[in-house]
Amino acid sequence: MAIDAEEPDRRDFLTLAAGTFVAVGGAISLWPFIDQMNIDAGAQSLASIEVDIAPVVVGQAITVMWRNKPVFIRHRTKEEIEKALAVDVKDLPDDIARNEGLPASALATDENRTKPGHENWLIMVGICTHLGCIPTGQTLSDKRGDFDGWFCPCHGSHYDTAGRIRKGPAPRNLEVPIYEFITKTKIKIG
Amino acid sequence: MAAHESTYEPKSRFGKWMDVRLPIGRLVHDQLVDFPTPRNLNYLWTFGGILSFFLMLQILTGIVLAMHYQPSAADAFDSIVRIDRDVNFGWLLRPLHAVGASMFFLAVYIHIFRGLYYGSYKAPREILWIIGVLIFVAMMAAAFLGYSLPWGQMSFWAVTVITNLFSSLDDVIPGLGTAVVQWLWGGYSVSGVTLNRFFSLHYLLPFVIVGLVGLHIWALHVVGQNNPTGVDIKTKSDAVTFYPYATSKDAVGIFGFMILFLWFVFFLPDYLGHADNYIPADPLVTPPHIVPEWYFLPYYAILRAIPSKLFGVIAIFSSMGVLLFVPWLDTSLVRSTKYRPLYKWFFWLFVFSCLALGYLGSKPAEGAYVFWARVFTVYYFAHFLIVLPLIGLIERPKSVPGSITEDVLGPAETAGAAAAGKKG
Image 1 (cartoon, rainbow over the protein chains, first blue to last red):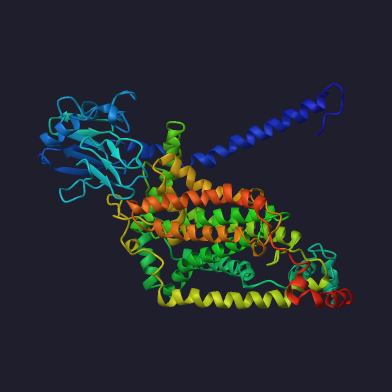
Image 2: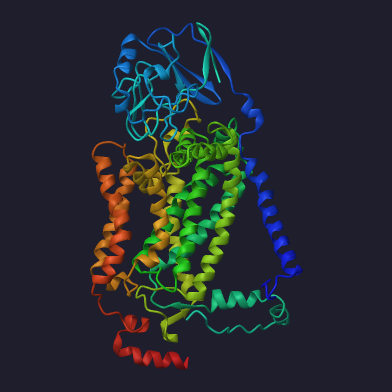
């Protein structure tokens, strides 16, 4: 294997080329064994649902499943919206909107967490951004944390009425998925 | 020392025929019969045998449980209940496996603390120690994967929380954590797809552990066993043969440990588990208080003690990773803590910290619990990074006996025994 000749000869070239070929080929052939664990196209295509939100009255919240994840849909009260609007974005632990429908740099204002004209509806993925538990706060009897939004029982993260992290170990605001209002009372998530 | 000359002499014609083709008989004789074992080993040295016993038991019970278990989200929980209620002797086999995992960890913790107390990681046993740490990590992975299989509420949320540890990589490279986590899950969340692959890997890991244990024992038989004095075997009178002396002592240890183990299996089969795991997995409801199995509690306390997600995850992995460097962090020239009057106190403080972290990990992460978890987390790391290097430099150790025989018989009789040993 050692290259002894003063000038590299044909054998050195062949050894090197064959070795590289085997190494690269070996690395590439690992890929199918790794990629088989990724989400397949079939599962990716089951990506959107439609939800009728007409029965959800003010102050009520429902949970729907989307991509096997719970989505919180909360019909917020006036006080809840005002509370969310009163917060200065600069004071938030995470000042990014985390809204997939907006550019990644959008700030976490209450407007950027909802849709214009539908500010009473807060729609977001109900999975704590810390370690993936489901926060409580969807029913009136639930613990809602110090900011009247949601509270994660696993490690004590508190979210406000716009689903923004305010206290606890979670690093980010609850994620707002891509959704649109098809009619006034029907939304499409995904 | 360990590199002793082979005393194997095949007697039968078949034995001689085999010995020049595949010398298994010679291997067994040299390593498991005539292998020199320090004569002063105490019962803490039986835990290697106890652990081997549990590894074989876990594989045996696991193989038969897999004949009845269904790794799908729809059937997993019911198939576990069926094992408990319907399968012949299922009521026995499942607790043997589940309690066996707990006892495996109890034994491995004692084994690790034994190594730390008697300096069994010091030269020339660094590789032996590092392989041991790798076995420990593989055991934790196997236990975590196995805990997911009953697909109860605790299984499901343990998988969710622990796999989400990797999502903290999003704070390093945005998107990387999510990609890794979705790759582990095979979906956008934990699902039956995840369960299926976890079952496959849970079946694989024990055989990886068997391979690592083979290397561990190989390394052990190259450097020889440590002993309570930390002094190497120097003369023949320092050692006894592995069979029957060490094997019979190991047998006593195994039977003693089995009394504890089987007491749990027969009388408290669910005591070490969590009641919530008898509720089928529900992806929409997180139990109010998630706790891991007892053997993960100290690490869980370390994770929760740190208010940042990324650094919490770094801390939990470092708490295991730091063990790899112990052979080089300890600066003392004396192996056994028996002769280290100052370090002794810090060793027991470390043991206490681990137990305290275990207790705190079982409590909610709020108020005084978090404060104390932080205090003991700091000591956990300080013990390895500050105490171990520093004490070795400032401590004045007690005098170490000249040989194992001298420690056992006293200096007066040693000369005679050594002479007799040389003759024998």
